[in-house]
Amino acid sequence: MSPYVEEVAAATDAWMKRFALFPSEQAFTEFSNYKMAWMTCRTIPDGDLPLLITINNFYSWLFVLDEQLDHISPETAAIRDKNFLQNFISGFVKILRNDQFVSIAEGGNVLAAFSDIWQNLIPASRASWQCQFTISLKATFEAAIWEAANANSETPPTVKQYMRMRPYFSGANLGTDINELATATSLPVYVLQDQDFVRIVDLCRRVVCWANDIFSLAKEIAHGDNHNLVMVLKYNEDLTMEKALNEAARIHDYEMHQIEQLRRKLPDFGPQLNKDVKAYLDGLETMVSGFFWWSLEDTPRYMSHLQEKVV
Image 1 (cartoon, helix red, strand yellow):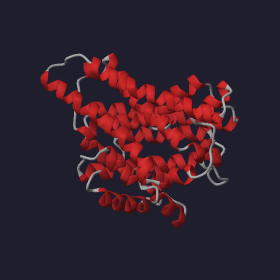
Image 2: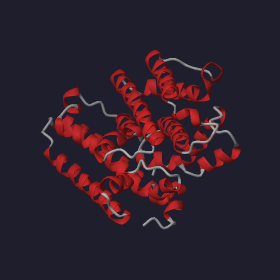
Image 3: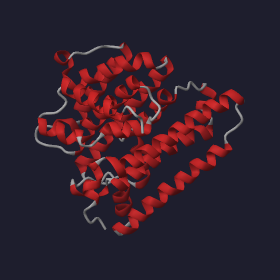
């Protein structure tokens, strides 16, 4: 855990209030209790304070949108409309491509908050990372359109569809992108595109998602949300809840072992590059571990629901 966690939490609370990201003080208090700064400071324990604040602002911003997508009310129902989400994406992409600053008056509080995040990410990153991040954010919101369409139809996706899309609509791809900033590494393209390296990064995204689906199962059952690996397995493979839960855990553990095996298979890139690759992959494993322990130890986001009987 970063020693800056309390400072990060206070800074993000002030930032969210500045951009009026919550409709009421009660909503703000409930969100603050999720302890997002503890997640950021577990997943990036060695980051400096300005980077941790920027990343925590970004993760908190993502969670605000996730909450709106998960908990639709008459006031927020439009967020699941395909055209609304497409326009949302266009707004983000303009900010990213043009390094544009948007005020609340010009773009609303959500876009303005994101433009503030981006202005802080630009000096902390290289141009190639910024291009990749633009693609990743677009992929996340395109996947959110896919998720919203499924939610509107109330038809669970197939297991294959769900496992392909989950790392994107969860934003796990953005977490692995941020790892470059967290570890202060700049790996060459021939490393980033190595087949086994690509697979390790993908698996790190996936295992975070499968763990999250297990942690959040009761919460999502309570909200009638079937976008969960356990529920998808139960529906498509006609399993009991207990067997579906066990199968989700088996998939998670199998893919964790794959990460370990693939790390041992990576080629020799030379002494210095091997150190950089190790730092990058250690950072991914820290991200996976940090999210796991945040879910179990820090946040009530899942624990309050896990007290209830699921199986």
